[in-house]
Length: 327
Image (cartoon, rainbow, N blue to C red; front, top):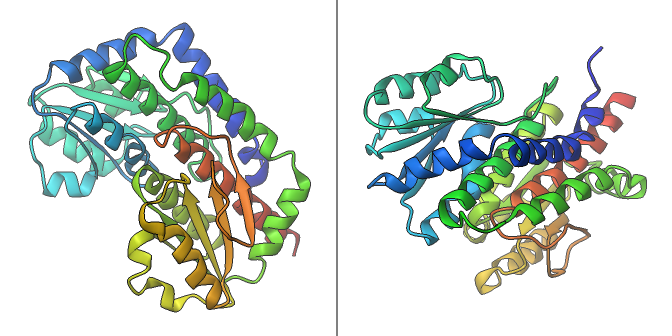
């Protein structure tokens, strides 16, 4: 019998810890090899996948660009349509058999190095790659949760190997989040507050910018697939240009925050949503903007925060799924 959805969510922290263990004890050479290929390339790297695998690299592209690496993240369908010829491709797929990813790789084969971030290490995609970086998320019975978390972690390790090869980089922060993710699901009181906050909602707006867009898009996908809720992932500043006008008493507005929003967009978005009667949830590593409920996570680098933001939102999804299953 497969795990229930909530039971599988509770294993996210353990999956992240196992992934980090494996990269520290046996997979370091693969990271180094992938990093060398990227550093040697003149023209950058494109990350591509579909669904969760397309969203995960949004966590790290800004960090790579800050260190002079021309990086782009595009879903495989768009990458096939708008192929810019970056010399290195990093193809991401949990199964290693995603049709759109395979189509793009078939076009790019022979043009330059192909890296693969894959959970199924024996797969068509793995066979096409010069270097395979395993997700090490383990089996999943439900929608991608562990595989998204582990993808963001491995991409952070890769970014460190490219930009800061002689330092620990964000590894200590990833370790801290592995523990926090497990502890989060032991807080029954928090689960109750999350479920009560969203009990009557029929619409969810998830606001984010920068690397947090990775978590917003994946959370929106989860809420649609698991909870059948009409959910949108919206740029925080863009929300102020009309999106807020559909908020109401049956809306839940979630803001994913680094605590360093420019121009007060996050605070203004929460104010407008609340003014129309929407329930509000802030998921943040620092700062405490006004919201009905604040879910605080450890303070980590912006490129690491999407793990905490997504796992925090998945705690809400798990609480709501349990409530639905009980009716």
